[in-house]
Image (tube, rainbow, N blue to C red; front, side, top):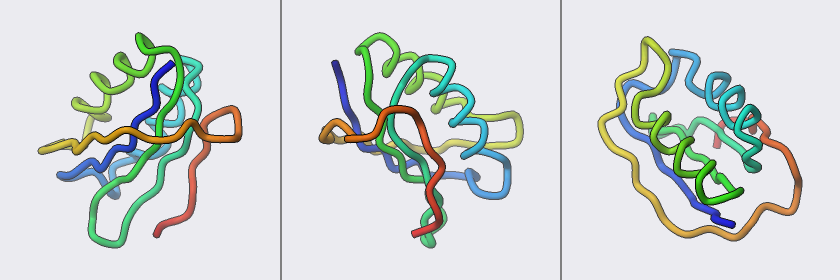
Amino acid sequence: MSAKHLLISGRVQGVGYRDWMVTIARALRVSGWVRNRKDGRVEAVVSGETAAVEELLRACRRGPRQAEVTAIEEDFADVPEELGFQRKPTL
């Protein structure tokens, strides 16, 4: 089991990044959440089987078609209490 906090930078807002990430995370059975931040980054917490989390991170580095990911800051996170993957409001 693995849990990570992510801050994703680049052209990641206004390109469908959050909805795309929800779709990918749910397909991989990864739990957590994703939201836009007012500073222009996307923030997420992802948790699940290590291989699934790593696969999601690889996908996040590419992002959806119109995104341009320039950096992802990763840190350890607590496992979310809720199962499933949710889209949260902007912080």
